[in-house]
Length: 546
Image (cartoon, rainbow, N blue to C red; front, side, top):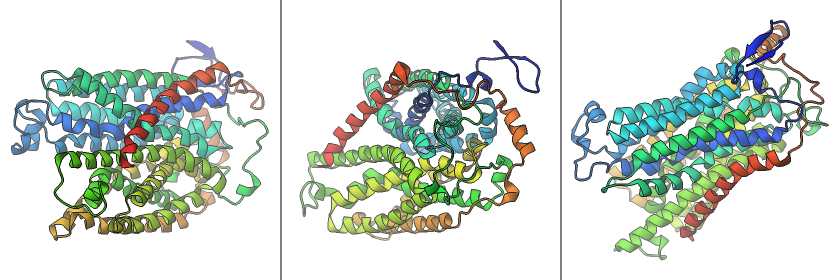
């Protein structure tokens, strides 16, 4: 415990996890913060890779029947039948829903408690939730899987997702988009690391024909807890009024880009039209993008089928040819993950120059055009153009997530941007349910109406283009916040006191100016090497497309 004097307060003991203990010292370098954020996001980003568990989870009891004939409640506790794939996938829906709910509920608390405590609790929930879920798999209790991986893991997802936001925004006022892009790139790339690792672990831990799902979940839970805890302890909070050397404020070229120098309280932010317009912008962008992610492999196979093997080929495929088509589709999924991840850092960094609102204009205009062209590429059998269009779409899907925190900081100020971001992420929870359901429902409707499989996605893709056009309109109407919503000086002082921002131990002009040094090299290598290995694996899988 340490003693520290707070202006206007009595001397009090500080715990290891208190926000005050994370205040950066004179020798700290701000480039150590993004690796800490990446350590957390690369772990929780395994959410996108959970599909590797669905089929193995449906074959845990060799020779046993499926639970399809039982009621849902009976399936939750049955130990004598195999879970169906649709039942297993509810885990994904639960933790995506809980991501938004937990981020909204605890966003304000996170701002005051700091990134170290929030990050460690996120590690406990995500890592511990996977361990509990693995135990549920080992005793074949589906309700425990839902509780561990879904509910508790989802809380870890939400806290972990928003933990780095306000910290990064304050450390990089000159490069808000790039800084948050680095962190949120990790969420898009987490599956590239976690999925191959999970597949390898399941193969190594399978016994007597039973896939090693339980052991794999427990091992991953332990690994993720350690990595996320290291990331949480790597965070440092920027001293109040800290700025990079030589930087005095937004550049002249961005003078008219709606970058606010004042802040809106989270309690007022949701009452502004800007909050709901940006909520709709995110929801519509994510609905369109996640629909493609959820159906990328079957859509590719349905649209092109045998033509992937030879132009003009249609029917009479052998087992080997069907396997080759499936491999090509798997390559598309690998590319989707890759471009989803890289698009986050690319577009978020570009938004520092284009401005956030203009960047979203690019997303929506290009998205409408590309979604409108996808059916044409399919009809003409132009698989390469189809794949290229999907990859560009997915860069903008990921870019929408990564650019969002900087957009919110521009509009609502930095004081409570993490809490506001937490509430706005509920748009993702809604889109995560609506998007996959919409594309699957429209496809099924087309098939029931006698539409051939290769044409069944046309109306769906045109619907997605329309949703993006609606997003374009919402983004157009975003304007600077009305003066009445900003916090006054007294409110700012009270909020800073609650966040203990009075604990500035050094002049903001001289504090936290340390060298990058060996610590920086080690920190970036620790997150960069696994990402590079995963990138190589993804590229090798994608080679099947060509």
